[in-house]
Image (cartoon, rainbow, N blue to C red; front, top):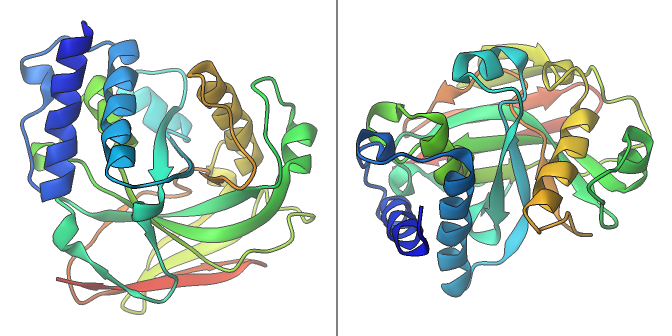
Amino acid sequence: MNQERIAALAERVDTAAHRAQAIPQFADTEMIDEQAAYAIQAASIDRRVQRGERRTGVKMGFTSRAKMVQMGVHDMIWGRLTDAMAEADGAPVSLGRFVHARVEPELAFLLAKPLPANASLPEALEAVACIAPALEIIDSRFDNFKFTLGDVVADNASSSGYVIGPWRDPRQDFSNLGLVMSIDGVARQVGSTAGILGNPLRSLVAAARLSAAAGEPLQAGWIVMAGGATAAEPLKPGQHILLEMQGLGRVEFNTTN
């Protein structure tokens, strides 16, 4: 795919996100391989940066074996985070800027130093300054929340918003922490951080590998969202979303129009 076509598709998905308007799948009219999809994603994020947004980290996707099998892939996908995606813990979140908003429970890492592509699990842990319970708001810009692998990668791996809870010391075993995500006081998802590749630290290692391969190695001060520990839940206005994670505390937000 040539640069002109990449730029055109990046503009289309960026405009859809900016206006919160669904668009047809790219796969309906385009042949997009994974390399082209990541080029579209990078170009769409560049458009955000040119508008004044600042890169804040990376999010991981397809961090469960079931999701990989469902999508016919053998590796995770990743997307780019910016400061405009961040929402404050406990604050209202307007759903007006999303198309099909959903929420999933995650573990977030805050990096104390850069992490190279070939980092081992111990090296990855050494690079972590803090960990926190987190909620990611995912949102496909494509009609009916349906997409191919190329579509979802081009669409920034569906990353749209994130809420980080209190940062905690990472010098504890966070590989299998129980968690409950509730909506309006009713438990909707119950799981464990082990649902993220068996250990969320493996997701951080993968993030280092994938982002470095794209020429964007993980930086000190960046956040890495490790991926969904459970299935996502759809959002609608007027809800209270709460994630309680064993040993790490809670993170929450309310939805508005």
